[in-house]
Image (tube, rainbow over all chains, first blue to last red; front, side, top):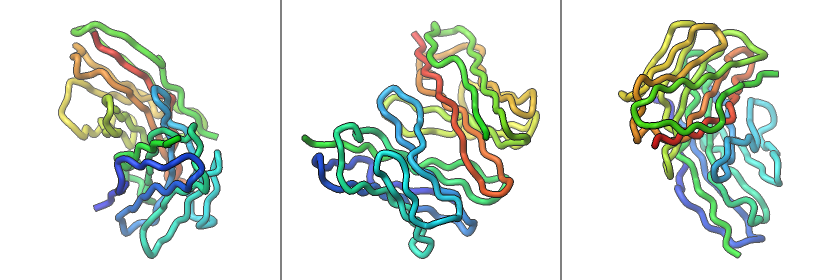
Length: 114
Length: 113
């Protein structure tokens, strides 16, 4: 079965320290992978996407993610957290099959400590 | 490029009133379309998805229904809203031509009072 797992429901980091939000998927099909951010009472904003080009993807606001096929992972990182990064982050996967759904991870809430 | 128009952005409705949220897609044809709901403090739950006109699959039993009267139009409805229908509703689409890519509407925040 196809699935996507965000391993941490909450992550807390201090401002200026690195951020790591984890995402793993499970499927025999090739995936398109996305990270979205949702600030309180806002819609989804695309941070970055992987669609079978370069495995290291750079996104907005200093975020990047690396697709590792052998580990079926697409972890989101940022070298230095900023207070404005506090939000909910969703890993989203689409598999290369017409009948497959857009699959959301359950989300990771990122807290930034001053 | 593809865009999704979803409206309204916010909505306050009394219990027992009907609901109609509309989502239209531009820039592509024959997309897969989705309705998700995010209840307060929860993740995004898939409510309905559609692979073509008139084809609707429901993921969870609920007080809502969906329809796809045209290729690029997806409507979420209710005859009588419940308090528990409050939440953030999101329309999404993807196509599978070339590289699959997801697009999302801006969402509708529904408050049932």
